Image 1 (tube, rainbow, N blue to C red):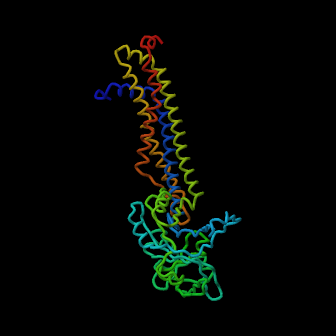
Image 2: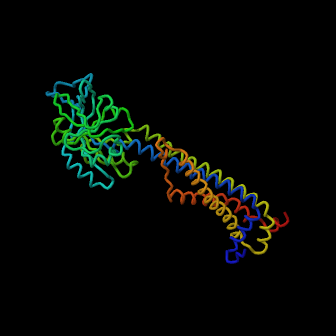
Amino acid sequence: MNHSWLPFEWIVAMRFLRQGRLQTLFILAGIAIGVAVIVFMSAMLTGLRANFIRRVLSAQAHIQLLPPLAITRIQDPADPRAGPVHLAVVQAPPQRRQHIDQWQSLVNELKALPQIRTVSPVASGSALAIRGDASAGVTLIGVVPDQHWRIIHLDEKIVRGHAELTGGDLLIGTDLASDLGVDIADKVRLQVAEGFALVFTVRGIFDLGNRGANKQSVFLTLKNAQALLHIAGAVTSLEVNVEDVDQAQIIAETITQFANVQANSWIKTSAQFFTAIQAQTTANVAIRFFVGLAVALGIASVLVVSVVQRSREIGILRAMGISRAQVLRVFLLQGALLGLGGSILGCLIGTGALLLWQSLMRNPDGTPMVQLFLNTTLFLSTFALGSLTGLGAAVTPAIRAARLDPATAIRA
């Protein structure tokens, strides 16, 4: 094949690679396997992370805003000459049901922030659910359905009935429905501690994937919850979803700077889970590093052998007038070509393995066990990593080849 149109360094580099076909194939296979491992593990860990976060955050908000805690204030003695007052124990006051002051204004301020996606007001409190002789303690959650379903997606977790809430409708969990012996269209009486009670109709039964939540959570309209809890026009919390879930804690701290509320992010309330997610990310970086290191050592070892084997040819080229810089570029090009070729093969192998794994590993309902994400960024970063690794691994052999003395190399 005529490569006269190519620069001299490219012609020599590709000839050296063709002459050592067996070495070239072995190093390409090694790079391809390493890159395939990187692609497979990166996509797998990204999919697992997204799957875990989706499951955890599908039933809770990214940030929950609560009224500030009541605190004990120590009063100074009435008479400053009475001397110091020593208190053995300072007891915290009881935390009665608090309301968020001027919550409508706060909602408008939150919606103005670019990081905020959704804000939903909530009125919640404890109650007793009664059906005939059966009763159970529950947590009332009064919401505006169209806003709140964008946070917890309850409309996707309905197993019977509908997620619509109007008038005297009620949504309950599967375990609570079983405990009370109720189904769609049955009546349930909700009674609060003060003795006030209202009767509601079961509109839908949901499954949040958590037995505790399914036994205790009861959803009704915001106005009905306010009426039942005697907090007309007030809310007990604001549920907030943000654009970037990883920035939830930073955004929560920002909110506390301009609003007199407690801001609890999912990162803070699910600290152990978040630590596990961070450990997965660290593991992914470590895998990339060690696989890249193994690939680099493989490329470097092959090129070092190539320099030794072709020292006579390099000496002849140098005697014919080829500069040290051109010899340097020849071996750098070999490393880069090996890295790029191995990266392409590795991406194809890794993608095939991912598609095969996804087709085999299925949930009982036929859905993928883990939703995988194959994006352009993953492949571009892998191409860049493979090429740069090959180029970096070729630096030492290339410098060694460029420093060869022509006369000594020819006599060798």
